[in-house]
Image (cartoon, rainbow, N blue to C red):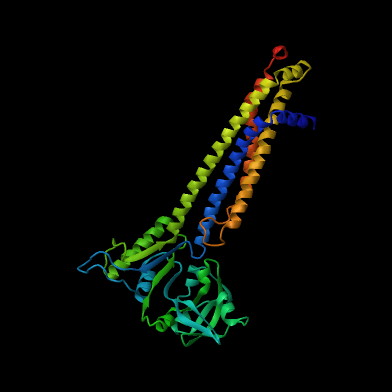
Length: 408
């Protein structure tokens, strides 16, 4: 306790200098925590963005040709059919789950008794549940028999049940979709965007009849299992070539079809975030290093000012290690105390930022720092305090009592 009081008295006698030096350490830890928290928040935001879809999925949508090919003029609209879906499933090796989709955007009047609303209606295959990460809360999702027999069944979200059924259970009840009755066989919650909770799912065969779409489909989706990035890119390229050959357009036409490789996009963003995290560590460590140099300088000045005191200590029997120990402890206390403040305010600011961010759809989501990072930062503080005091401590231990007592 006497040693600690002595060190605190030494620090308080040079408050301004100690504060300015300690502030550089606090700023370094503050910046490290803040930058790492933001990079973690960006990673969380990216995962939130892909939470609605399987990360290892590829989506293919028809477009309009922009290049002439085989004597055909540009400007042709490409239309996918059930045959295209079957072709892709047959020819591309490695597909795990797959579904086609037809869709109507809020043009179907949906009603139950006196309540009505306009919702998005999708016709899909059973595997669509895994492609969109649709979590069933009651009943079941669509199955193959629903498609084969063109059953008039539907799966709705809990949000739609709450809006239309007003406290009643929707299971087994019949909804009117533009005058046609569909039985509710399942209910779901979607962990992705809020818009996905306003969707009604129908068997794709039933939807094609209801929408007057014959055998046309709007898009094809499939997952790639455990395929690597290069393998998913090859699968996407193969799908493009299959569609180009079947619909007679150039594989180099950028607008004929649109292919979205979620795994490729996720890896690209994750790589960028990884670079940002590395940059954050570099900036934080160099800022801390600048603070260490400042602490080392102030300890050199402290040794110079306390030369006579050190000489008295050594003349009455103080060992070199005891002199070194005093300097090391003082440095560790300065760096740890100010470093803790920097750590605290960094975490506090991240928590404050998190409160003002939207729950979904933000680029940054839940910008926090792992507990392990805080532990590493604390270790860095202690080591920084020791390293910054090594040179001043050795210099203090080498002072000769006779020279020290004669100093002004």
